[in-house]
Image 1 (tube, rainbow, N blue to C red):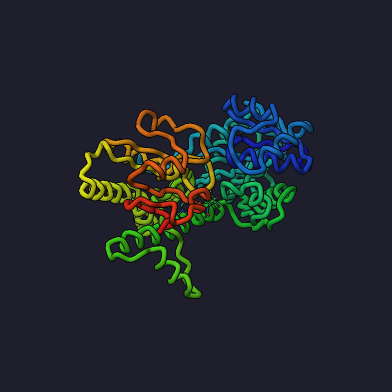
Image 2 (image 1 turned 135 degrees about the vertical axis):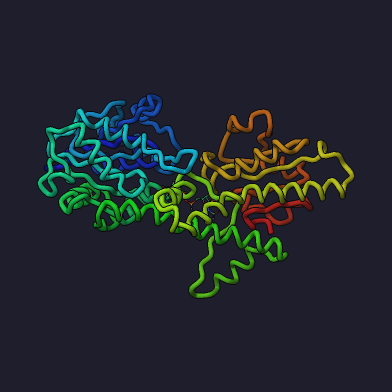
Length: 420
Ligand code: SAJ
């Protein structure tokens, strides 16, 4: 069966680029999202998220009639599920979006359909999803019941794209294909080859699920190592960035960069899925999460010490001291403030500080509601001219470009090592 119509469930940072990539190869694509604003925006040929090059591809696809968005699934040959998998308060994964998306397919599944789960998921979720679908459609057979002869093929194929470079990585990265049977894998690989320039690497669903969790946990553990070093080096009066640059001259050492903590929707979340399923053996992965989660509080303590020093030195009252926080996004050169340690640090500082707190974030026009009435959005040069204490949180290119002579302040807490 050919893939004439492809449907993507969930039109966020992963689903919309994926839908657009299929449409750019002249496939008919139906995007499904429960957010009516997203549906309306896409049908106008515009996008509701910020990602380089995505708007152009979506505009073309919609204009040519290849991509349209709807709020309820419609029949298609392949369905890709790309919905969020957050965690709950106890760090247990929340699969409610995956379950709702899978069950929304029940009325439109037909023999020969391929269902792919792309959302980051705990090991066993794909089998669980097959169970939900089988219970709702007893007239069809599924891979865990009928193996290669199943009416419906199911695979887990994780997304691995880097926000900010999605349109490139989506096409160029290798794709892990975890079919519930070899036939499911072969069908899934056939589907991705429509736009993929990277390789399709075939495994089973459980290994593919664990692979995605492993990739992000690997990065989290490595960032935690850098963050722990930064705390140790501060105690030892050693410049951690110089230290890392020196150590990285060793041919087999490659230490990542410390920062104010780890943000985003993936690296700070996915390791918990491994910990939740394997609480006893996942010691290093859990500790790394804690090290990274503790970093914002450590930064705030450094800011408090800098302000105390400034007050001692100047004899002023704390309400006369201005603090400027540079960067709110969860990483450099993007506008995404969600799950951002920089935003968290800024809010903690502003809630504690009696004087003015400025935030400089060149990638947004307005502050998020959590900073309303607490923080003033300032431009870079205005903040440099008026602030007493500088807090470097995100190394956006506009901040990296500053000459050392532009920083005249004595009190600088630089979590990114750009103004050292
Ligand atoms: N960070 C550091 N130091 C570093 C690198 C990153 O503090 O040396 C921080 C960033 O500032 C940010 C956080 O880590 O707060 C995460 O940023 P990131 O660029 O490492 O990753 P994400 O969350 O944008 O995307 C990751 C990617 N995973 C890996 O690189 C293993 C991406 O390929 C995944 O597709 C994505 O998670 C996802 O969706 O799972």
